[in-house]
Image (cartoon, rainbow, N blue to C red; front, side, top):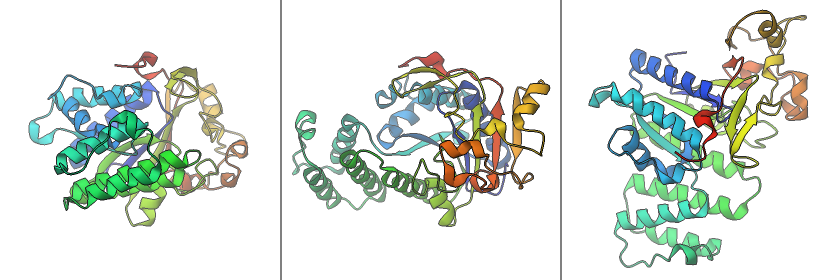
Length: 338
C-alpha cells in the first residue's frame, strides 16, 4: 500500500540484504507518492542524533552505539545514498525508538541528557561506578533530572531511560517493557510530525498485529493499532540463503525454519498448492502475497512448534502482506563493524 496509513511497516528477519533493498525502494516510492520523509529503525534511542548526522552527510562517522549492528549500518548507508539525490527540504530523517542497551549506552544517554539539561548540581558517576549501582539508585538519578526540565522531548527520552533501566534489571523476557516504550516513542514521533506518515523497519515479531507465543505480550504494532493509529504491516524474508544475525553470536547464518517462524513458504493457497510449490515450478525471485485479497489464508499448522496459539489464525490478522525472496544474502557481508 502507498496511501492511507500512519505507519508503513516492514517486518524483517534481520540481516538480509534483499529485504533492506526492498525497504529502500519502498521508501523511494512513498517519498515520491505521499512525500514521506521519516523512517523508524530498530535501534537504541541514544544513537539517533549521530545517525541523522551520518545520513544527512553532516558526518562521516557511523554512530559507535550501532557498531554491533552491521545490519543497521547497511540500512543507514543506503538512506544516506538516497539523501544525496534529494534537496535539503526533502531529505530523509531517522527516528530510533528502542531501549538503550547495553549498560554503557544507557549511561551515555543519561550523561548527555544531564549535560543538555544543565544539571550542574547533580553528580553524574563514572561508568565504572554506575555499573555497580542498583535499580533504585539509577531511578533516583533519573527522577532528579526530570525535575530540572520541562522540555517535552527531553522528558520523553528520560522515559526511555527509565524503561531501559527497568528492562536491564528484570532481564529475561521483558517484551512488555520494550514494546510499551517503543509504542510510546512512536506516538511521540507522530505527534512531533503532526501525524505525517512514517516508514518503519523492525523485527517481524514486533510487526505482528496480534499477540504471538514468542512475544508473550502485545507487540508495539498491536498497541498502536488499538490506540487508533493505522499500521500497514508486511513480513519480508528469504526462504533460503544466508543472513547476518547477532545471536547466538554475531555472524552469518543459514536461513532455517525458525527464521521462517510461520513457515511462510508452506502456506496453502488451495487444497493442493502452497507458496513453496509456486517457487518450485515458477522462476520467480520474489513473491508478494496481498492478504487483503487472500483473506481466507490461515497460519499453517507447522507454525505450531513455535507459536501454537496462532495456528489457523487468519494471516490477514497477523500481517497485511507477505514478501518472500527465493534466496537472500547477508547484509554488510556479515561484517561486525563498519
